[in-house]
Length: 258
Image (cartoon, rainbow, N blue to C red; front, side, top):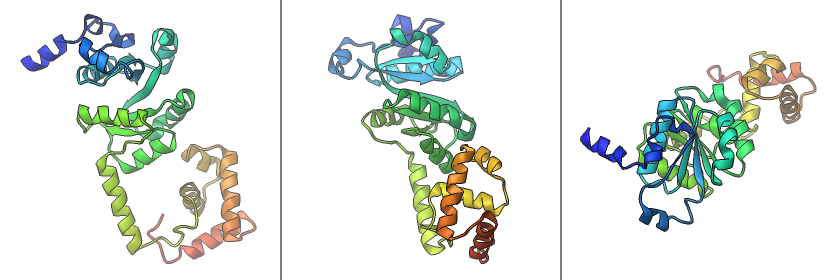
């Protein structure tokens, strides 16, 4: 406990102020500032609605040598009010905690669009392949589970800034497992449709209306209609009823595939 306290005592005074959610946490050593002169001209934006979590995260990243200033805000609106006092942004770290990506998908997409080309990286308590893929689809340039250490977190942020995309090792292993399983039992439509079209196909097989499909997949209804038209072309079907019939025929031997 003593070592933890002494570590936080090294944080600059202004980073220890009670209301430091909007303040910049700076590197404490002049030598490190000189070595990272070309890096710390940019800053990392941490977005987290929980004050204690974002302040602790900002301090931890700073004291572990992130190499750039850290500005923590409760929301993107808070950042907009203070952005004139912030250095150029190097990356955005969005901490969604235990929330599902589906619940904040629109927020991730908006952030990715607003800050582009600055990378937006998601920090989450959930380490799940479906969650990770959904975040990447929304425009995230990395997905960091809170199960990793702070050093890995810093490396992941650096990778995103350099143009890469960080994925946890568990998700890579999960993908490998899916690939190996797929080779043994490939679905009847494997390679025929894109990932998004496959999701629409599954919804069509369940008899869902376009509006419901759009809501569940976080798409515009017009986009769903475009996917259905492309599906019809690939199946050489002339209407929605024929699409459903041909899909059911193709999946007749795959009762467990939904």
